[in-house]
Length: 418
Ligand code: PLP
Image 1 (tube, helix red, strand yellow):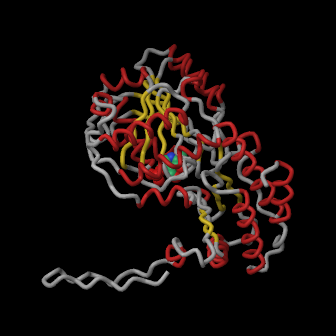
Image 2 (cartoon, protein in one colour):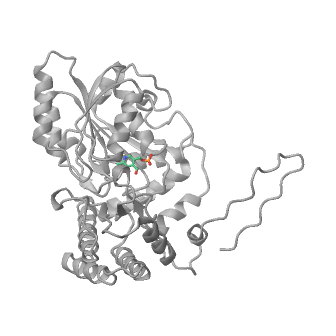
Image 3 (cartoon, protein in one colour):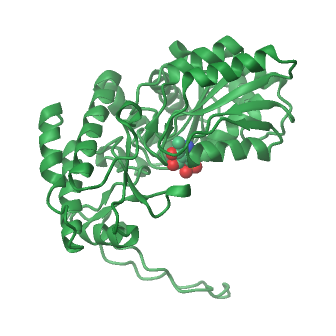
């Protein structure tokens, strides 16, 4: 795609502080079918299928119109199916972090105690948000790469219940920790939280639509997500589902809130109080239709098959997996860098060959790479990525070069991914 000439400044307009920044090569490629596609393998945002993307450029409509009401109702009905809930779900313009803040301000009052179960950077972020709003957060953290033990959580909650109080008002769980590629055994933790009586709040930002999460059947009170991962829509929408216990808490909660407040949404469920992100809703509508047409069980099975491919390929090239099989995420795989491999050299070699990956976070910065295999990413694209990976390793004269793609192919054949 040719660069557009910079727009001339209007007479009298302030001079721009700096010249236009160069558009990265892969961003220039976005709408040019002649050029090979840059494989966006970061664990979100994920590649948005062309059939979804084209809805984003549809003409805008008035958000106080019957056409918009239809769109809004359709998106929310579909979201309820994907969240597997009969309760309320609402969508705000915002990112996943906004969705996490939304859950805190609607459920709690200053000084409330919450138990947080961080197992990586995003669980830590949610704990910090809760602290920023004046909650007293107790962390039961596990090292990066591990998952909280449901029995240990049960014991901690029983001890809290038996104590003099005030008791925990909520438990915060990152269902799928994107910084480590670990998924939690959430039903067992949900049961322990139910027994205690606290609200159970779940971050499903990199899980919803890719990993089985039964909000109502498991007893989750609040589930929060963003549009840009397994939901295969662009970044920019935050969705939060809440059940009756959370709605009761919302009416008692005393934390300051305005934009995220659930109450105006609940009062007029078909008439959002502020300007909604109409174009993103068009795209989310299209992506949810794709997910539901595939069917949730098939969609989850597809993600598990992609996981098997990723988990076969990295070790074949000498990159050990961070997460043990029993906690391995269906949507994100994190692989440790072998001795002598430099992340920047690897990610630059990958970029040159046409693939972008994520790096380590927190204590694993510089020691790991992470890929997303969720949403609209196909098995063919994942195999193509491992071909690119082999080529990048070969560029770096790495001893494991050439081993990832054959391992990926045979795993894909074994699990029926291709
Ligand atoms: N929680 C999890 C599990 C995530 O993976 C992310 C983003 O990667 C977030 C929260 C934050 O979302 P966002 O970057 O959209 O604010």
